[in-house]
Amino acid sequence: MRDKIVAGNWKMNLSFEEAIHLATTLNGWVADNQPIPQVIIAPSAIYLQTLLEGVDEQYIKIAAQDVSTHEKGAYTGEISAQQLDSIGLDYSLVGHSEQRQYHGETDETVAQKMEQLYAHQITPILCIGEQLEERQSDRHFDVVKNQLLQALKPQIVENLTNLIVAYEPVWAIGTGQTASPEQAQEMHAHIRQVLLEEFGVELANNTSILYGGSVNASTAEELFSQPDIDGGLVGGASLKYEDFTQIITSIKA
Image (cartoon, rainbow, N blue to C red):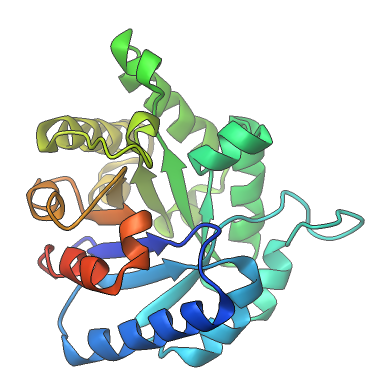
């Protein structure tokens, strides 16, 4: 039975006070509305420890937005998996398209970051997805398969039981465009088939695959009703309490 998950990526948004207010308000709502999917929020790094201490992890999990490829050392501005582990963090995004686009992240560095996360028992939320031109040229299935395998193949196979995959078509992130439920399901089924062929039926059946890309309250229910979509990685709408809670209730726990 795959976990149903709704994760909110807060990106570089919210003041300290706003982040605390939203997290604690969500925590109370989640506690009052069980059973619902697992809720994960990924705030800015400077808020991680405060929010870890401020929410009940029975109801809300906290994730980092990124992690270093390095264990430790002279890497100013970076945060290691060892440091995330030391404050009790259990999840981290990795491979987000904005890291790939703005910071030159490659499939190789994504794999290195995943190795660091696994070394410290932190579950990666692996982000993969194609550019618009790659879809238009009918290369989207190959691109997503390659991103997935480049990240997973270097890992110890036993570690992959702790894995969340987030499919985010880059052309739909922050644009207001959303893949149709049929397009999203088609790609999610493709990802699951790749997992099946490369790593076996158990991993394929048990890995939660989330959809991300301008998910909002009006699109969530139809997207989440698809058989291979196990929840969402939500951007801007996760910053709005009413929208995010409506998205969470759009999926059956």
